[in-house]
Image 1 (cartoon, each protein chain N blue to C red):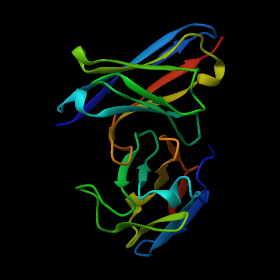
Image 2: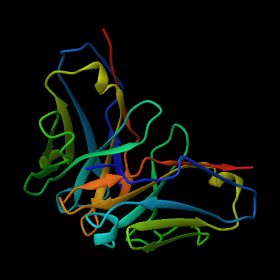
Image 3: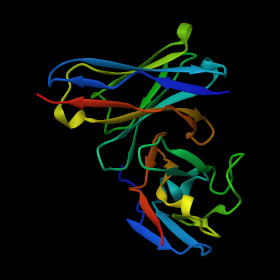
Length: 110
Length: 119
């Protein structure tokens, strides 16, 4: 199974909004509402930010939101803050009863 | 408080065997799947496989099937990731994480175990 496709990098200024896309196929992203998003700061373990396309775990700011259309999921961060600078990974359940991650997107806060 | 505590960093030679561990606490260990994720140096996350400690049901990514063995000892709330013959390409950080079964997403993560394989 191939990794989901994410842009290698995105950037934005504090206070702005950015969106990270995650494109798969009908066998993963498009076939299930089981897309999740993780934030990873350098040298740290990943942290769950969004699950089941658009749900936020307790403690995750509501500046983070998720959505999906067809085979593409998106993570939007509004009101960018310096601490949002990190790598972001999407993942999806697949028709093989496994999970596939995206290649990751480096977010730079200018 | 849910915690997953992994074993310490390892330095091994090619061809050697290795078993790293992940001890869960603060929840019912036998009621949640545990998964393993690889992150090679400077690279992204890769889903390796998961195990249900309650009955040891295991699922592997096709990329890792036959390359590693995932196991668990529910009596001590510990999951394992094992290699029989390491290669230099196994050098990576390995994370364990608790799985939420509905969507196979990871809600709690261990701190990671760095495995270095070098002659």
